[in-house]
Length: 245
Image 1: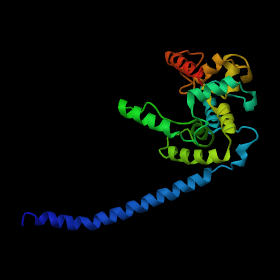
Image 2 (image 1 turned 90 degrees about the vertical axis):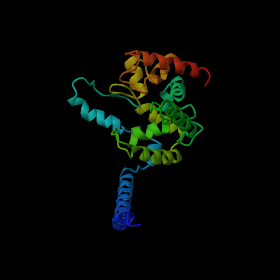
Image 3 (image 1 turned 60 degrees about the vertical axis):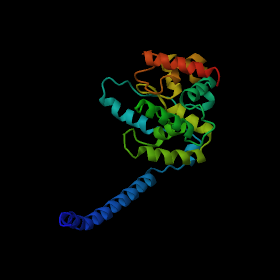
Image 4 (image 1 turned 90 degrees about the horizontal axis):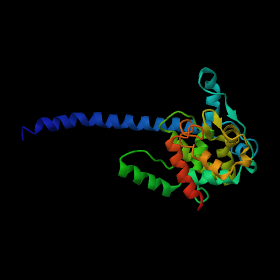
C-alpha cells in the first residue's frame, strides 16, 4: 500500500494542472476557429461577380505577374481569357477526361475518386494521388493563395460546395479553362494554344487538346515543348480514355 501512495499523490497533484491545460487548449481551439471564420468572411466572394461577365485574374496569375520582373528566367505573363464558346469542344472533353471524369455527376467533391485515392495511397504507403475535382481546382485558382497553408483544404472544401450552388457547370469550366496553368507563365487555353501551336483555342484539334490536358499536373516540367517521358505517358493515358468518354 505504501509503495502505491507516491503515485496516487502524483496523480492528485497533476489533476488540477490537467484540467487547466484542457481549459486553455479548448480556449485556444475556439480562438483558432473564430480567427478562421473571420478569414473566410474576409475572402468570401460576391458570387454574382463570377456568374457572368469577364473572367477575372486568379491569385496565381496576380502572384506570377508581381514576381516575374524579379525572376530573370521567367517569361512575361501570357493570359488572354475567352468565352467558353470560343474554346474547342475537344479541349473541354480532354480536360474533363484528364482531370475529372465525373464532373457533371458530383456537387463539387467526388467522393468516389476520394475513396479510390485514399485506398491507393494507403496500399502504396504514399501520398502520390489526390482527388481534387475541376471545381476544387477552380476555387484554389480563383480565391485561394498559392501558399501551402494547412487550412487551405478546409477553405477549398467550403468554397467549392458553395460555388457549385451559385455557378453553373459551364461557368465553372469557363473559369477553369481560362485560369489553369499550361507552362511557365502561360495561363488559360487561349494563351496556350497560341503559344504551342499558334492557333486560337477554338481551332484546337483533338491531339492538341489532349496534349494540353496532359500538362496540367506539372505544366512547367511536362508540356508540348519539353515532351518529357511523364508527359508522353499521360498523353497516352488520356488518349485511351478520350475515345470512350
